[in-house]
Amino acid sequence: MSKATAKHIFLYGIIGGILIAALKWSEYRFLVIDHSIEIYSGLIAATFAAVGIWLGLKLTRKQERIVVKEVPVTVPVPMAGPFCPDEAKREELAITPREMETLELIAQGMSNREIAEKLFVSENTVKTHSSRVFDKLGARRRTQAVQLGKAFGLLP
Amino acid sequence: MSKATAKHIFLYGIIGGILIAALKWSEYRFLVIDHSIEIYSGLIAATFAAVGIWLGLKLTRKQERIVVKEVPVTVPVPMAGPFCPDEAKREELAITPREMETLELIAQGMSNREIAEKLFVSENTVKTHSSRVFDKLGARRRTQAVQLGKAFGLLP
DNA sequence: GGCAAAATCACCCAAAAGGGTGACGACAAG
DNA sequence: CTTGTCGTCACCCTTTTGGGTGATTTTGCC
Image (cartoon, rainbow over all chains, first blue to last red):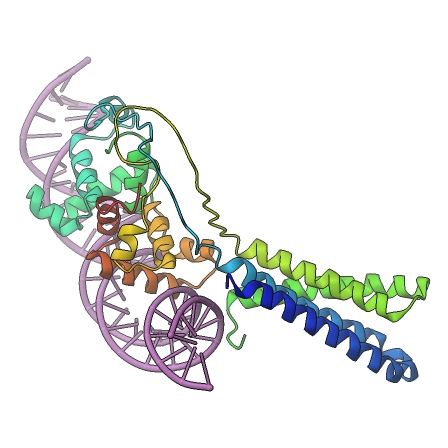
């Protein structure tokens, strides 16, 4: 699409020209049938709207081809410590240690069954813990819980 | 344009509304001015072409115009970058841009439905993308995909 | 002009996850 | 002793997710 942009614009111009020519030609016919101006206008409008939308989509769709990024050795990461188990935030959200444990395992991509095996409890218990921690975090999905956990500083 | 998806219905609705409004307006104007029909046609054509292009831009504004950004920050702690240093690992894993986009939204805790609305595609498409990216990452769950994505340096 | 990759969408089915309710025992604090 | 919290577990139900298959259209490339 990158190199075809000019071609498409050219094509667009050609089509426009042809349409204009066709309009001039059909003008004579419509001068006789004078009450068809609405249909006429509608045709033009519809055609050009369609073409315009198509062109707009084409022009803006694939703009992610040239992704030449040059990232030097930068990035001020305020990550001082190795990890940050924010105990303050945890208690502020009234998240119990067991729920926190569950959340961490969720963040590691484990299923409820795997977490249950690892914590040596039943799957229903894991579901209870996760439900509670979702409620306290305001999350509706486990991926969202992980995202919010990181945002709250509960997860590394 | 054969399938009647939400996108097409929406597009047709917008086009139809604008078309009818413009027709009413321009018809009135045409009766007053009584100029040549070419100007009239050209106006409509240009207007609708512009509207179409604007619509296309609005609907698919995902311009990833990443220019060479030189950030001479001299900060210690040469940890990872602020964003995702993809491209290298992404192509190595054969993850397409669209799949990458889906993965990022998954990492933000969105459901398939929300992702579908945000990317303006159907939910089935999102499921296809996510399935493919899970397969390429070796993940079986979305939380695991997020974790692996971070481990591979695809996600911040 | 044809090919391959990418993107899109549909349908089905099974598994996982999520929401709600209720319950029981342990344990610490009042 | 009562109360509250925590951890544990079960059941039911709905929604979400994952897996598989097939199809079409768009796009980039040769």
